[in-house]
Structure formats: C-alpha cells, structure tokens
Image (cartoon, rainbow, N blue to C red):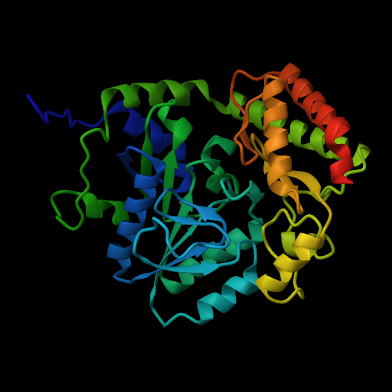
Length: 371
C-alpha cells in the first residue's frame, strides 16, 4: 500500500483559489514549505519564458535556497540560477540594474510586498507597481512572495495593493500551522504542470496530505475578514505605541512612517537606516559601513499590520539585540531573536499593553546605551 495517494480535487484547493483569486490565483499547487513554493514558481517562470535571469532584491528572503542578505556571502545555499540583485524600494536603482541586462533575458521578478525576514520593511506602492508594469513591458513573470504577507489582507496583500502578479507563493499560516506551502496564479503558466502536457513535473509524497489540507481549511475559516482587520489594527497600534515610547525616552528612533519611501525619508537619518537602503551620496558600501560604526546606538520599529520588527543599530547592535530578547523573555514575551514578530490570534489589547510596558522597562534599564 506504499505510495497510495488520493488525487481527487480537494476542498482546500477550491478554498484557496476562491480566497486569493483577487491576487491572481486561477490555479494552485501544494508544496511542503514556502521554500518549495518559491522553487517551483521560479521553475515555472523559467520554463514559461525560456529565459534565465531572475531579478531579486537586497535583503529579500524567499526560502532557504533563495536568500539575499546584505552582504551576500559567496558561499551560500542558494539555487544555481542567474539571480540579479537590485535595491529594494529604489525605482531608479532598479532601472539601472535592468538596463544592464541583455534584451529578452529576464524571466522573473521575485519580490515581497513587505520584506518579512529582511526587517519588515514596507514596500512602497509606487515601487511595487513599477515592478508590475516592468514585468508586463519586458514579458517577465512577476512573482509576489506572499508566504508572510498574505496574512495582511483577506485576499492577500497583492489584491489590497491592486497589483496583478502572474504568480504568488503562500505558506505558513495558510496551512493552519502545519507544514505547508503553495504557489498559484495564471492558468496558462500553471497549466505547464498538467501531467497531460508533460512540460513540467511536480511531485511530492506529502504535498497534499490530508492533515494539512484539513488544518488549512479550518485556519482559513477562522482567520476571516474580521480577524484580519482586528489583528492588523492591533499591530498598527503596537507599532505606534513603541514609537511613542522611544521618542519619550529620548532614543534616536526612526520616527518617520515605515510605509514611507526609505530613500527620501531617511536621507538625513544615517544614524538609524532601518530600510536597509543606504541614503544617497554616502559613497561605497565600505565607506557607509565605516560611517555606521561611528554612529551612536539606536533603536526603532518598522512593520505593517500584524508584522513588526524591532531594530537596533550602532556599535553595540549585537549586544543590545540579545539584551532585548532576553529582557522580553523575562517579561513573558517571545519574539524572534532577530527582532521579528507576527501577532497571533490569541493576543488581546492587554497583551499590547504588556508589550508596551516591557519596552518601556527595557529603555529605563538600558536607555543610557541608546542615547
């Protein structure tokens, strides 16, 4: 009885295509993780366009085999594709990168509407629409990585921003907490996985396992429009409260709206460049890094909706980040060590109050190192 699978259309498939159709999902396929979803989406783009180049962005993360931190180590686990790096939220910088590519060589643009693992940096809508239009103009496939960001809007962040991606990737919460990933989009692209055409194969013993399918159906049912709005409102409230606490404590925090264009809003904020993008006019990466090391320590917060990230910056970044993480644990609050947090459905306004007070207590205890 080994390798027996139920291959009939399942309820979860219908549920996902209905919910995320405003983000462009006409057909969907399941995987075991967001990493697998990104891998298969890129494979589809390469096959569909018969091209090789893939535009990605600095500090982007699309799974363990498509990770682009800054700086990118020459020894990494990335897939051996022809990736081309461009600066996130930077239209002119991206245009310069694109202009250097051979004609008709770009297969795909892969981007997150909010850089999740890259620090919860909110994508400028103008920049994202520029990428959408550029993909259309160049005949490339726009892949919106919604593994994280699909939680920020009922139909996905792409739909909320009125983007028209060719493919999107899903994962994490969409599987109801189980091991899960999915990719979907335009019918003409996804049809390449139809076994009757034989263009692309896609198999996996646990791709549509019954437990994940059932958990996913329950999860999507629970995380309805009301819960999406409630959790996002709670996250925005928490972000604003943290910003206020930082200002009241006299910390050199990045006060500008995290949705703003990081280039224009941070040109004079070198001491706290939480966008991950260097302000114009500061020369080479090496020179900018030298300037950074001479700056005072600072702390800030970025994010959108229920996704937030606490940042530290300056010569004591590593120490302060560790101190903050352990301090929050002592307060009964767990966040990722890098500073990332995604709010969950069990949280209430009381938890937001507790988080605010925990941040305030941290600043009272360690504030001298941040001024």
